[in-house]
Amino acid sequence: MEQKILPLQGVKVVELATVVAAPTTARMLCAYGAEVIKVESLGGDVMRVAGTHEMTPYEDDLNPLFTIHNSNKKFISINIKNEAGRKVLLDLLADADVFVTNVREKSLIRNGLDYETIKELNPRLIYAPFTGYGTKGPVAENPGFDITAFWLRSGPIADWQTEGSFPFLPTYAFGDMATSNAFFSGILMALFARTTTGKGTKVDTSLFANGIWCNAIGVVQTQFEKKHLNPEPLRPTDPFNQTYLCKDGRWIGVYCNEYVEDKEKLAKLTGIDWIIDDPRCATIDSMQKTGVIEEVIKDCNRIFLTKTAFEWREHFSSNNVSCEVMMESQEVSKDPQAIENGFMVPVEFPDKDHTTVMLPTPPVQFSEYGRREYEPTGVIGQHTDEILTSMGYTAEQIETMKKNGAIR
Image (cartoon, rainbow, N blue to C red; front, side, top):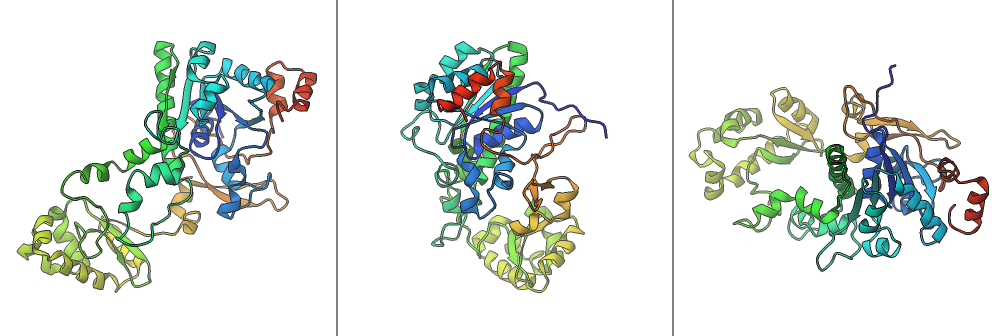
């Protein structure tokens, strides 16, 4: 098979970041060809042991969660508080194209890694700092995690559940992954602009900014009449934009673009023909004002219990209606649609059992360009010697720095 060119080939990225959002951004750059050097502390990225609370393996030779966000990178372990270690990092940045970090600004300034300082070292550098809440404001220095900055502060968790119920908990790092896509796009725009201006720039984003952006409709909607978005099971806005419990105990969501236009078709497909000529059901507004929406929903609830979710999916899909069964996460890795399109791929790890895990792939594909295949991640400092040797450091210098606690 012909090897395709990687679209970001020749781009050098230095990553000084931990956990998920910023490392995933660098992982995306790496997947499409960039050389990414991940700088870890001597103790390593805490994401290496995320398996302890996510109940997945986290050994050096079998660490699927860490591999998702860090595959194909080169790993160097540096103590940036050590003068010799900090010099190594500055040497790496001197000819880098992109610097991705989520270290807090005060620490960056203290270690001479702030934008103004690094810009003098490398004016063409795309300097990409990542924060929880943004660089200004009363909580700018607060630690910001996916669940706090992306989810809790931007509104969805409070509004996406029935009033009084226990708050739902999103999958670990869901907001981080969404945010990484925006950060990735910003860095690519900066690289593109540099081709014409020759200038580097600072490009930043935050979990809070992306949480607000993803919840944009809700944030704007609640500035008017509707102050809360909590679902009301018997009074949804539209009966054909709703989820229903089916005969097999599973749920299906059925969705149309325009109630008035699609009403007759969907009424016949669901067997609630009476709404076609009932003036109370003429529009969404008339259903809400007359209260007939509750009658319609009760009818739908009864009817959907007559078939399994998969039977309903076949019924609607064959009639060109958008719908989907509510799938469990454990089912996604076996989904033929995901597998055939390469959205999930098998990755064999080098543990004693050669364990194979289905891993999600970066979600962009090109016809004329390639993407790197997954490589399982290894140990802390796996490429330290290799990287330093390529930079001109001698074996003696490397050994001295290891003894002095500058590198690992």
